[in-house]
Amino acid sequence: MALPSLHRLKSRQDFQTVFREGISRHGSYLTLRALRPSPSKEINLSACVDTATKQVNSGEKSEHLPTRIGISVSTKVSKRAVVRNRIKRKIAAALHQLLPQLSPGWRLVIVVKPNAAQHECVTQQFLQELEQLLVQAEVFNGNS
Image (cartoon, rainbow, N blue to C red; front, top):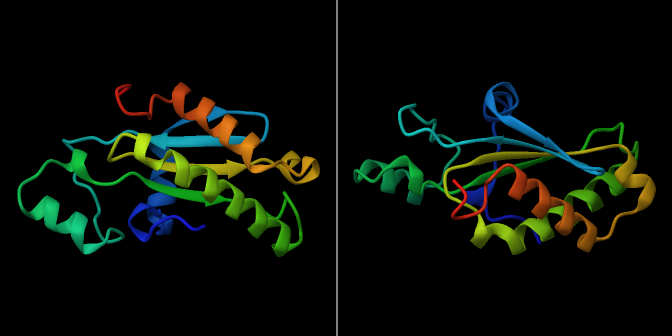
């Protein structure tokens, strides 16, 4: 199950911004890079869907923009695209369950470490580790 288009981090520039300015939290299988929403900065809305653009144009604060998430699985994890895509799907399924609990406006990048393919992690392990990393980064509602 893929993430909704509104919640996807797509552009190279957005990924680079998250890596350059965001905080990072490390787990055994995943690394989370998170960029806190800043109301004083101008946010690039080119990757957002029209609904988010309408919210900003109508005068609502940037805090109401959706959390956008990118998943990065390098060829260091596996040379086989089938394996990399399977891992992406597992992470996306885990994130789909966590989306309602995330604070709005965050930009997140989840980087998969090479040992994730060796252990053939199941979705439950990804879910547990993602929850731990998101709690550490204070991305859940009520923690920001």
